View 1 (tube, rainbow, N blue to C red):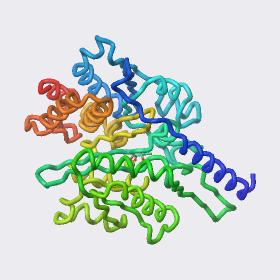
View 2: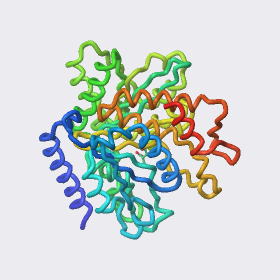
View 3: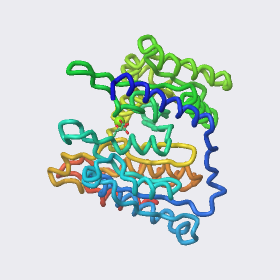
View 4: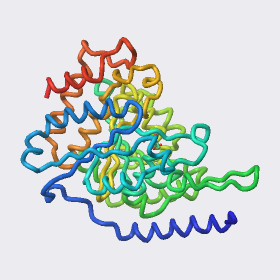
Amino acid sequence: MGYLLKFEQLLKEQLERVEKLKNEPPATDFSAVDTIKIGFIDGDGIGPVIMKETRRVLDELLKEEVESGKIEMRTIEGLTLENRIEKRVGLPEEVLAAVKECDVFMKGPTTTPNKTQVPFNLESANVALRRELDLFANVRPVCVPEKGIDWTFFRENTEGEYIIGSKGLEIGDDLCVDFKVTTTQGTERIARKAFEFARANGKNRIECVTKANIVKKTDGRFLEIVHKVGEEYPDIKIEDWYIDIMTANLVNEDLRKDFQVFVLPNLYGDIITDEAAQIQGGMGTAGSANIGNRYAMFEAVHGTAPRMVEEGIADRANPESLLKAAELMLRHIGYVEKADKLRKAVDGAAADPALNMSGTREGSSTVEFADAVLKLL
Ligand code: IPM
Ligand code: MG
């Protein structure tokens, strides 16, 4: 197919998506669900190790609910790099079908190979899951009380550079083009999530982060829509920033204490939530929620840690990130007290001087960390 036709096709698909966005289903009301189904996907690398311990903690925390049938837990197999390479798809059909039978699911990190690792284009499982389940809000809290930091990032999770990120065009030998997409509807819904969160949590300020001075159409629209939605929330002030200076501001101790809630397009959100996680104490400490109206996925911010696996120290991986994701999951399904309890226990284990989650041979093990959490529950 000629590249102009391909481009036309991509635009058509996006316009069809916009039509769907106009008729979105309402968000699930979990208080009205008889049995909440929670799926568990191990992932690759250190994924199975940290998931096993997270599951052990959740089994204990939700024992009564599972016994009474209020909650059902399901293991979902098949989202491994081997299976994905064999089937040549980022997200095998049977995995997607199993996920769709659940209301929410926890997911370990999955490998996203690049061109030098796999000879064909294997899409990121994460990107595919977020797109197929329309998980539009990537919510990432970062909290460092002793530094006055209590941030919640609302990263748009389906559009931007990601939505047709694996369908860019190579034109002749010398020209490559990728695409960035912003829609009015897609921006409205992430903005509304951020403002609603701010209102419900007594926050009075939102940082809107773009590069609208340069990326004029897509980021320009994002900025415009955030302000338009913001008119419905006159009690919440919007501060506009460009991504470059915001990257610097996250390490500016004078300014950063004032930040509360961030709303930003996909790729910028990807980048500065890693920075924020590092400020909190490292990638192993941050959980992440991917929320849509029908489904939601909870995961660690970090990847599969292939180096730890190669060195034979996967059993030293820190499960804190995934346990924090479990906390976010509990909050999402309405189990707020259990979420608070889990958070307290995880913070307690993280502060325990007897544990050292350095991820090295000398460090404490994943099991030891989970044991400490269970003791504090
Ligand atoms: C994240 C990750 C993913 C992303 C990868 C694994 C596709 O970095 O969740 O932040 O880029 O969104
Ligand atoms: Mg990332």
